[in-house]
Amino acid sequence: MLSKPHPYQGKLIVVEGIDGSGKSTQLSLLYRWLLSRGYKAFLTEWNSSVLVRRSMRRGKKKDLLTPTTFSLLHAVDFADRLTYKIIPPLKAGMVVLADRYVYTAFARDVARNVHPDWVRAVYRFAPRPDLALYFRVPIEVSLDRLLTGRAKLKYHEAGMDLGLSRDPAESFHMFQSRVLEEYDRLVGEFGLRVIDAAGDIHSQQLLVRRLSRQVLRDYQGTVTDLAAVGVEAG
Amino acid sequence: MHGEDKAFYGHGLPNLKVGRLRGSLIVIEGTDGVGRSTQIEQLIPWLELQGYAVTNTGWTRSTLLAETINEAKAGHALTGTTFSLLYAADFADRLENNVIPALRAGFIVIADRYMYTAFARNAVMGADRQWTRDLFGCALVPDLVLYLKIDAGHLVPRVLEGKGMDYWESGMHLALGSDIFESFVRYQTRLTREYNRLAREFRFTTVDARKRIDQIQGDLRRHISGYLERSRSAMAGEMPAVPTALRR
Image (cartoon, rainbow over all chains, first blue to last red; front, side, top):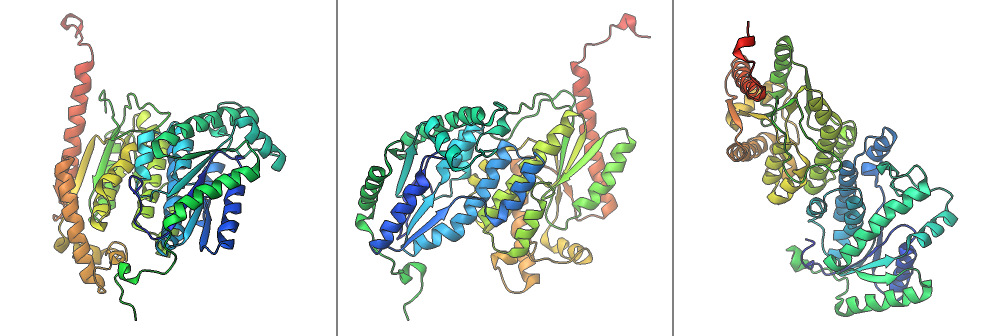
């Protein structure tokens, strides 16, 4: 439950931010560092799983997706990822690193006019992370990074479905401004730790490691507590 | 229909004002194998002969998700939470792309199952009741809910005469027992108990589904006629009366 600390032996660290904020880069650097320090770490990303890929594709092709179904399909994906990729390693005492978490839905779906209370209720089953890092970046910086990396902006990432503007860059600007506004709201509501993502990569990573170390202070390791599962040791 | 404003069950749908949807949303609820689709097949031509435009919609029939749900059910790999979300997505897709446009055009929409099915199933699975209800906050409140009420004992022969007991409808996913017959009876007993509870809470119009098919059809028609009659007079009440002097 998002409203209270999770009961699992492991630790959950999540990164949030708009596309081009550099959060994935930071998370993979953290991942390698954790492994080098002897932690059992597990990295998971939020992108379309096999489960909903077909529906997503169909929805996009036939223009069937609405803010509500878009939101629910992502929730399906999240629930599935939680079941298989997040909860088991957490129970096993691993350090789970999640690239995007429920806050992505709270920011992105509400920017599409989905009711904020509804989307929060939908994701109520999600465990609360031990650390949620929000990489805040001005839109110009993110747009610049995205356009150098790949030539085209994605349709939904630019919020083209909302009909804000026919120009993808302009639409991206308008839509992601709303997303940023929502993220700023979430910082206080859910205690996200803000990281200035316009700064240089190295100093951001040092901060990420420092914050992670604090969370891992009482880390218990990965020996599965069989009694907690109700099994007697052989 | 006919002058009554529709309402959402919860927070509703973004970017959409329901305003006055002229059509009627009639829901047929009831457990697996109770005979909902047989009854609906007979209701549609009956309504059409009276001059109503009718369309129907059913659980997991959305363009967006029908295939995904079938695959997921075949895989037996999803948890209750994931399934609930899939069903909610299916529901929302049909609502936005079929039901609401048809209601706007003045159709009678007959829905084979509605959100109450998810409420009942999830409750039996032990899911958080409030969570399921919040999930379906996008639902439109139906104009009439006709509930085909039956008990597991009367249901068994009907299901066996029909398509037989299947994995999901027997609640095998809940591991209530390894014997499909016993599991079916246990699961459907719990499910119908849950439907009965919902019938009281949401004031369903209950129809005794232990009767013969033609008798059930007769009861359904009586209730639908009554509803249509009431909404016609509600509509007439809103119209300015024609002055007596002008009447012929």
